[in-house]
Length: 190
View 1 (cartoon, rainbow, N blue to C red):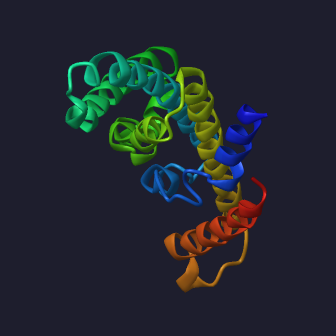
View 2 (cartoon, helix red, strand yellow; view 1 turned 60 degrees about the horizontal axis):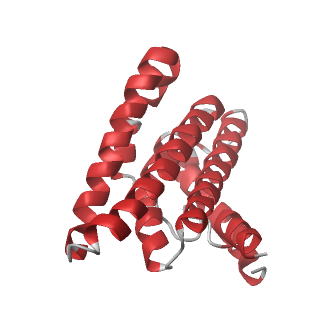
């Protein structure tokens, strides 16, 4: 039951993007096309899950025993940056079109506060390794759900008759706000 609460809570109730407002840059920047948003969601899923595992091990087996807890943020960012470099290399080799479509937003996963936030929250919530991995995967699914929903709505808006002054960024921000309000409706679930 505890894992179910972590999963539902992370995807819907405390969605990392729509209720905690972490990871807004890629959420707004990569959500123009559905295919690109799915690719970004997959990259974030990989990086967030592996980063959470590595940072959990680093925190509990290196930083805490050596009394170096104050180095947490620096170590976590270095781990995330290394993983993003690995994802970039793999994507460039496997899917050059997705690599090209993600453009500058792929290296920005390094500074995506959602990835760092989940790694730090895993430690703050005192999760064990398995709970931390479940938490990371659920948050990445929540991130992907939010960005895919937003991309689908934005693609649909491109075919709609939107007033001239509301086209582009203004209507995107209004839709993002409405999505955030909708997800905050799940708050009473868990």
